[in-house]
Length: 449
Image (cartoon, rainbow, N blue to C red):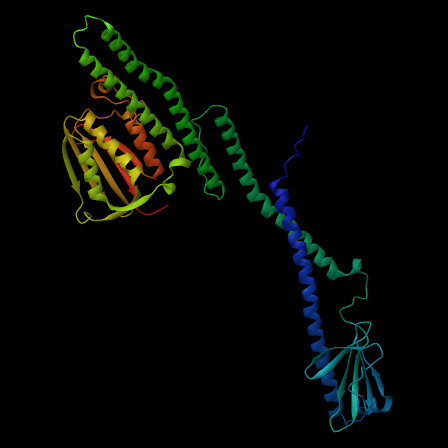
């Protein structure tokens, strides 16, 4: 049996990683900062030595000046430095036994001994002597223990203050993100419990906004598929049973010796079989459209075609009514790139629906807008009630069962058109037509999302 470990807090992870980053930043700052300060100390050291050498030369005629005192005692000690004179100094040898050449600054060689103290030799103008300038104490080495050093106390206080401020700065946004994630988790649990109509609230914080949109889109697809599956499970047996019953009745009549018109019954049987074939074709087409991995727009062959001529050709092919086709000026030859198969499914089913449920008139208008095209399909039928417009795209949806019995069809055309439009990122809207019937408007974006 495997035991799941408790997940780590987002705040703890972020704070720990940020604190480690802060410590590393401090360490790097101290390392490179000390090196930078040491470089500045060397330049100051060399500058002080040059000043002492210049002062030595300038005080030649001053009584009790540096020149007189250094020549008299040969060695002088100040607060941080010592001065001495040496003659005939070998420039290729270090100034002391434990000295190594550290660097050359301002044309002067600077040596460092084992205690990290600096030494240099400055030539005296018009003389063979050199002034030896040595550190006797590193000004950066504290004389007090670290736990009593006020500068170290300041750095520690600064570090702890920044750690607390960093924790607050991380905690506040993480708390808000966790709060929204917990809400989203509860909504997902309710959705998984069967509340298919529940949706997450929209937020404007990334990545919560993207997660919310993704969940809502997923919930829409699942709810639509579940409803469609429920409709399929109830409607398909009924739809198939009707033509099968008719076929069985016709077969029984044909077997009778006194059957008056066997040829007509055989023709009826062919028609019933054709209905079943059309039904299975539509169901297969709809099931393929609901599987986005098989029929996504990216996987279908696209083509660039004159959209106005394409719409007119599909209208003339699918509708036998009095067709009227209007387009905006200047867009007769405008090209659009679309997956032709899906575009045909959308337009063909809308045109057939208007032809089937209208009263002999179908009007199609093609308009071009700044970021999208619209194709509106209107008929002069009885229209679609406003409270039924959400369910009109469900499979086997019938607003009036007698209409389908008289006009044919199984209520799958608009469901196929809607699923194909979703794959194309098109939108279908339903409204009222000035002709008295329904108006289906297809919004086709021309700027890719």
